[in-house]
Image (cartoon, rainbow, N blue to C red; front, side, top):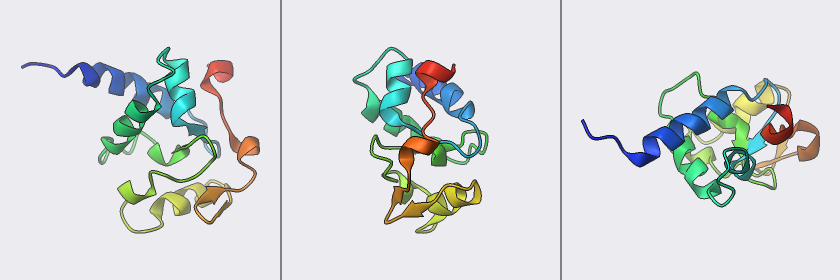
Length: 111
């Protein structure tokens, strides 16, 4: 079976995402920078799109650099991503995390 070169990158992304603590969020760019591929934020987004039903990958904790829920349309229903974040104590208003800096988890300094 031929493997896709993105498979390994995606698995590295998922490993970081699995380590985001409950009640915290990070950004696509922060993950890319941690992995040494600072210009690959969009590829991190593609990895998040491909999590499918992997419950062990808390994709709802990954947002854009401004705290906007840009990946929300990849979750079932119209507000599941927001509901999951709010269940963890993170306030969301108009599809953006309120007080984003407070909840931001930086893998560069945390891992």
